[in-house]
Length: 282
Picture 1 (cartoon, rainbow, N blue to C red):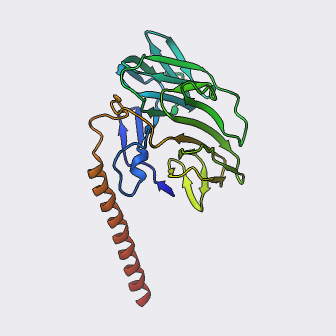
Picture 2: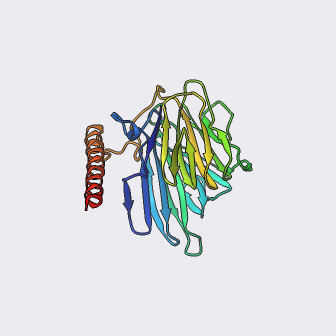
């Protein structure tokens, strides 16, 4: 089953810092969790040049910082100053606690990135930071960037049952999504437009495939997208500072909101149809 999610309605604007928060679990018709297994959320973050996010703490989140546009400047007391851009990736395994700041310089280009919040398998693990160059990207081929700790198939790791891939797909080409036995697929269209299982996904839209069956994606225009293979039954903790923040609305509220939004959409279609019939009669 492939579930489609529109561009998220959860947007936080802090003045020069805008976050579009995507909740994979909310794609389900009757969500019980804002996340889906080990994937808590995917946040598209936009920072203007010259913007500082002061030193703050993360706990029990595994955070992947993927930056295809602009430059993100990280600082912490353990690793010091690091630069994340289209050639470098960072994974913060926050564990028991990790403090850091983020900023863009006035001379930097606008920053648009994904910050991916993964749930670890246990609380209060040892804090770590991973930073380094990514493997060279090949056009129209999935690049495996992050995998579970100990597996060694990807250059970076998280302490959870999830794999992360990215790809830049040329217009008109079709490829298969990555597959792994027993893993569901979540994907996010960062730019462009693609077709998956006869459904069109535009920039900022997302899909959740509740199966490990084969699935293909075709680009309608040059597109950049990311994909995650995750074990929906993996052992996880839900105590992340951001990924499982106490202010995230409970599932019962989201179910009510989704029902209301569906009813509103149907009612608007009904009114539009009636208006069209009236105009034709006149």
